[in-house]
View 1 (cartoon, rainbow, N blue to C red):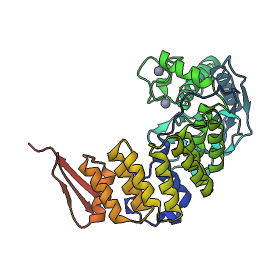
View 2 (cartoon, rainbow, N blue to C red):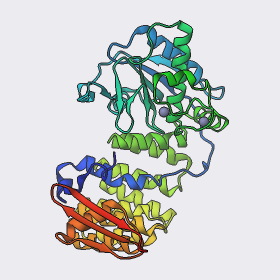
View 3 (cartoon, rainbow, N blue to C red):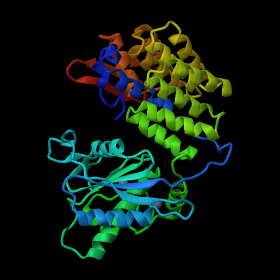
View 4 (tube, protein in one colour):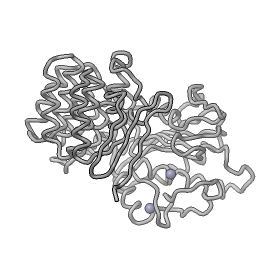
Length: 405
Ligand SMILES: [Zn+2]
Ligand SMILES: [Zn+2]
């Protein structure tokens, strides 16, 4: 869930001081979206890493064996050495229990990612409790795109069936979820990655991937720990979990093959900042700018770094980032939020939110924050369309938009 989706419009600007780590994660999240990886400057050595299976709660042993069998086939690759291991059984954390009796699949994925060893290629949870995912409701299996954990539950699967049918179902579920870990969304073609909404849908899924997703899986299976592309994803995953030191290690590994990649170096700076290594973070941002003087990301990074340390230079770096940003609307949006939340500078926030609107931006978060800052005013934007935004205590933001005749 993003900071904005969390409905934090009511939060005071001092929130940062109360929850530094989470806030930092969320504030820097936009920087990470831009992290990419150019072609490696020297060919990396590839180990395949290990695939781990974690029995969770009361998951039956027979099911764990089916998962191992399916994963051995689905993660085999002729280019690397890779083994499937079963880790000790783990309990289902109470924190994952939802009011409706289901278990939050996202929380369980994080549990897996926190127990899995560093050489993990993928970690798979096998559960027997009903699962639910924030954006999907009840689910049978779950994985976050591009992260290493996947999970499924036997709870909704038919119990009385042949062993062959069991195995076929498990293989489809795991191949589907592995596809998400490789970075795929749901697929419209005849493909095991088609989106399904019921247990019966599993029976209708294809056994394998469409050509596009077969190619994606092939390239993902050829990677492993130490490979720069793999480490980039590990870095983003560890960053999301707030494991800053591990994220920094992953980015350093990714940099070995791409020492001049400014985006990876910026990510390293962000991880170091999260870890509290401010001098090293500054150094990383400066080096990133040295390789790519026009890139906005290192300047956003330095703006946050200096805002955290409450130096007077934060706004200069933020303005420098906005000037370099190719997307002016989103730049003004980000700058407004950083001014408001990190620097408690409402006047500058208003200036940037207004610039976002002047450029045609109609982001509801920007409108909502601007209306609240200007309260009790009702904000009316006449062009190019009529937008009326009003903040009503107890109701939140009321937005009306109409194109003029
Ligand atoms: Zn899916
Ligand atoms: Zn597909």
